[in-house]
Length: 285
Image (cartoon, rainbow, N blue to C red):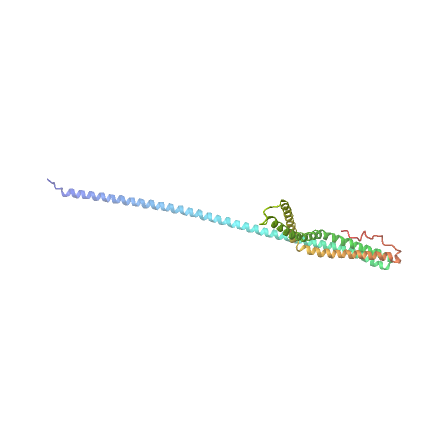
């Protein structure tokens, strides 16, 4: 048996149900608003953090750029200072070389002036007796010979060792070619295909010749290194040595000729100006 629900009760239940739904909707709306507010706040804070991080990064980049610029400036300053220092060193070297050349020229001028003074003295002696003239002229020539010998000795200190090495190089190169041929021939004879018995005596001779060959190779290598280093220096020294040697020999001849005149001239009384034959005119080297 079913009981019918009054219309008023149904209406009340519907209203209650609508009220509940409305309340749920309002609660949902409030939750959405709160979520929006929270999202907005979080987004603002996150944006702020991002801006702060970006600002720090930009600041670090600026500092890095400043450091890099300072480093480049310091590097450029160092390079410029190094270049200036190199220029100053080169300038000082040039000035020292110029000063040395000037001093050398001054010394030569002083020597020449001294000799010219002596020349003036002996020319002045043309009006005096023959003996005085010859003695004065001999003194001048002997002074010139001393200067010439000194210059020749200085030149020979460099030239003679280099010339000796050059001659040693030529001699050792010839010996090396001969010894290489001998060693090659000995190896073929001793270790040839048809030679099954090795002679210990010949092997010892071969080892000795190989040692000599290695010594010649080292000598040739050393001489070649020295010649390569002095490839331009040696010809200049050779030419200078030849000129200075000729000058010394000519002065020696002039002195001997003048001494002979001094000895044979009847106006000199047979005086040879101090009997200096050989002592002052002989080559010291």
